[in-house]
Length: 124
Image (cartoon, rainbow, N blue to C red; front, top):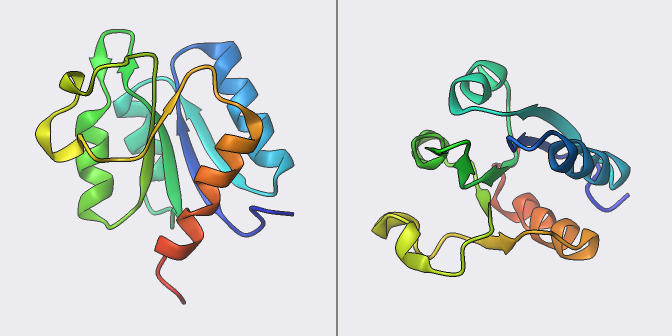
């Protein structure tokens, strides 16, 4: 399987989309943490977990996921933003160049993007 061995956090507040993303990643071989609908729940779920990467919805019912992205960046955990926004001005400067996927996400595009986590993960 393409993503076998990767542990990926999914943060998405729309239940059906969260389930769909999780199912797609699981089918591709990932171990999925979540889905978590809020930054606080995501932080709880990843406590003590060795993540290879994360897929983050930008807007969680009005709460931006940028604090979670900062937390992941501090731990050198790669992430991809999911967004319905076309404008980069929604993103803080430090995240303007972060990888982004536009919703709805095509399965092949998602798998390709998440497969890049493998190159970013610390070998161990």
